[in-house]
Length: 154
Image 1: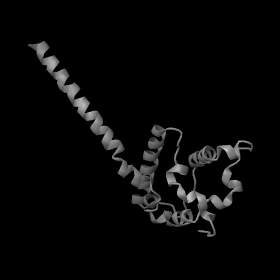
Image 2: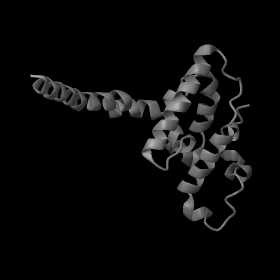
Image 3: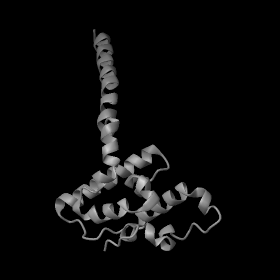
């Protein structure tokens, strides 16, 4: 009788795992429409402190076809992308809802590394013959949110 109960428990646990794993994956990742909304520049501009960056982004020439996450999140693989998206999203939400959002957003050291890697990733052919140790935006100042296009936001 005990062996029968153990097999039954094992089947119930196995069935629960078969159901729980896809449900957990769906809840963690969500349907594509939700992910697309969270990746949109409009969503990122939802915080009032990002309004000027979003306005500058809209005037930034070729880069306005990108999404914020194309430049500001790691894109070497999907797992790392979503891990950092979660970390940055939670950090942003905590700052925003606690009222401790800085008046001027500054790029962190990690953010600068990610941004530099994404510049090189997208413009790999163009930068293959130059020093990629220097930050791209040190020469291409008009690409920053502060001086995008013809407007200066701050």
